[in-house]
Length: 357
Image 1 (cartoon, rainbow, N blue to C red):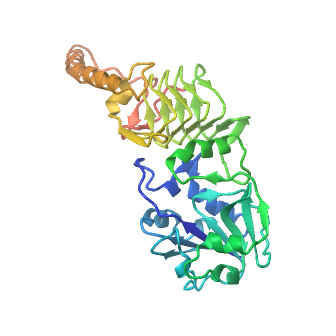
Image 2: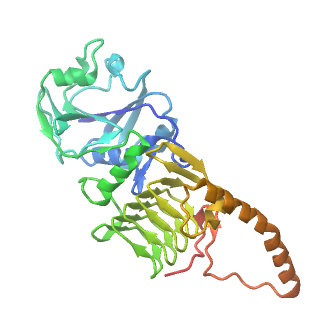
Image 3: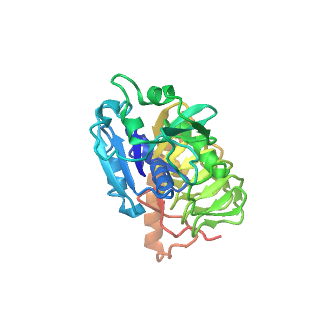
């Protein structure tokens, strides 16, 4: 059996480390990787990806498929939402085919078998965009007909597979993350260890004893949580992140390599480096790294006035700090840097000198 994966048109996201929506991280890996692994685990080794323009980042990320023991081929079409006119030209479409979409992943059956003329996977009566079909059924789409209309009109057998993970806009991120955090979606790989129900911990995670974690919470590899921080519920922290003292993160995705400063409160947002995204309101702010580190405890990042005041205070404090440092350097020998002080690398990534729990 082969797989035909339709990749909707991709636009850049406001997150600098996430080039397109299909590569947005759900827990520890991009959504598209979850999909590819779900296909590979069912013994399918040939995957044809049909995509439109703007998918260069996807092709670069996936490569030729050897990473998953598969063989990938890519076919670009004028409109990936309606590839029907070009399906007949795809010589690889022979034999039984698993048809899927790269913006929705249903809990597929563990064993996939061809059912003549095909089998549709649905959720509460709605087609998920996934099916097992014969090549004849797939290639018989008439001119001017959509693939969905064609397959549904043939009244193919249907099987209800349960709730799917959907990722069509950034507004879908919170619900998709929660499905995985609560282990309500079967069949995805999560290398983190569930130490207790709702607590997912990666490797080398360091949490201060005074920090408070409220499930569900996911902590990526090498993440650091400082004293007094409150993490969760609904927090997904990527790898190599550092959360400063007295910070608060809930219902939020913090992308890998991000530094959250002391006292910063994040609720219902997506943070990637200096980019702060409100997925529901579709707004994005670029936060100065100095502001991120100097916000007073209890001041939410969404307050523009508070940001302005914090920025003014930070700028005004620079001459005083510099003068004090020069004076102390002249009068005393330099002291070694304490290992208890948090440090950053590239202004967002913790450098490993954070306080150990």
